[in-house]
Image (cartoon, rainbow, N blue to C red; front, side, top):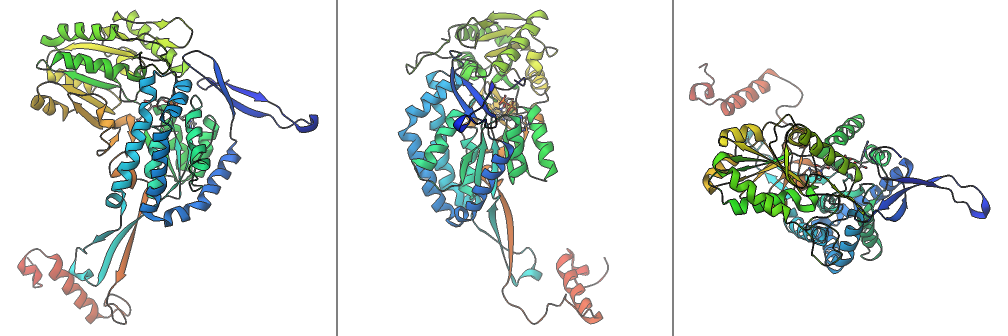
Amino acid sequence: MESGTAGTSTETAGANGAEAPAAEKLDVHNPATGERIASIPINSPRAVAETVARVRANQAGWEAIGIEGRYHWLGKLRDWLLDNAERVGDTMQAETGKVRADATTEAIYLTDLINFYGSKAEKFIGEESVRPHSPLLASKKLSIQYRPYPVVGIISPWNFPLTLALGDAIPALQAGAAVVIKPSEFTPLGLAEVVKAWKEEIGGPDVLDCVQGIGETGGALVDAADFVQFTGSDRTGRKVMARAAETLTPVSLELGGKDPMIVLSDADLDRAANAAAYGGMMNSGQICISVERIYVEGPAYDEFVQKLTKEVGGLRQGADGKAFEKDVGAMTSPNQTAIVEDHVDDALAAGAKALTGGKRVEGPGDYFEPTVLVDVDHSMKVMRDETFGPVVSVMKVRDSEEALRLANDTRYGLSASVFGEKERAERVARRVECGAVNVNDVLVNYLAMDVPMGGWKESGIGFRHGEYGIKKYCRPESIVVTRFSGKREPTWFPYTKARRGLVGRIAQAFNARDLKRRLGMRG
Ligand code: NAD
């Protein structure tokens, strides 16, 4: 098994005792129990190319039914998600080890997103009429139509297996593209279930499919697709971008983060501490926009740390079935637990203190204790690299200037939060270098799909949500129609002194911005 991948196994099967070629499979485990719950075939690069070719053949028909026609089908997907929320929640919970509350948020987000893009698509990507900027183009009717990339390939991670796969597929489908998704090898089941329902229960057009596997399958999708939407680590994002460069395929990359939270001395410290606990521990801290680093102005530090430690120390961890009675679930990928442990051990060895948590939980299942670290500094991995686990680290700062300097001292720039008196906090928030900042809240920018969500610096290239989140799947096609004309334009052949002189004088009259030059005189 390649390090950094889910378990794979090889099985041979053959009719009448004949040896068939080995079929590699992905073994899927429930992280809350460690139990193997499924084993599914890996798609070869050839199968990926065939899947892309098949949906590509159906894309023109999908584009032709228009925005309303596509919303009709996506609306059926919304209804299916609403009707099957429990079933989807069960699969999510089984393959991720999430607590019930976290496992059931995905369908809620997706149904909202379908309605958002269904109702806004005409505004965002509908045909645009444009007035020519120059009277010399007065005879032209200008318009822009937004035509989709035929096939969008989506490669997604394991922390929100539906949100980060279907969530990017929905605007692409609404734009008229066909979509093929490669979900994470750790969490392939939920997406496969929805895609199967799209085909068999909803009866949707054959423009949505998924392929299963690890890096080789993902690479084959990069080769075959016309646009690649990738969500995952910056390490893999670089590989995807390099591979896409070979075919000049555009990419949008949603990568990691190391999100700071700044707590000003005039903040409501109860709200700030509760928000830090939620923003740092929701989904076991396995969110790209999790709160990871906290900078607190001196006068508020002691009280904030005491409240935060109490809140985090009181969180209920474990598997809760359908009972909604736990707060923090399992680590979904065992590789990630090792990273979290390494960051915490590195910090503790260098002088940091764990006020609560600080280590793995003994099995069954893969859990890391909700952890609050203090006495940390920027030489430690836990303050520099993405931890992606239930760990928040707190530093005392002199003032907001020092908080901003430290918050911006990172190669990442996904999102941030600032707590304090509203106007002061907003002034500070505007100076954080990242794609989105929440004032007196955490994580909520992801639900505000009206505005873009994406990373600065090494947190990504491109954005999802808002107008940009659907327009990126389209190529503008400018249509320039001649409304009235003679046999030839004055600029066409044959060139003569008289005609070029006339064109020059007209251009000068329009382009000059002072009277003398307009009249053909030198300034
Ligand atoms: P990862 O980079 O290991 O894997 C992401 C996907 O890429 C998986 O489907 C994987 O199979 C595939 N892949 C691996 N090698 C590939 C290759 N060579 N070519 C093509 N595809 C390949 O990331 P992960 O561990 O699944 O997810 C965690 C990371 O995702 C974290 O860094 C997190 O911050 C990031 N993330 C970002 C966002 C965001 O919106 N910015 C959201 C969620 C997660």
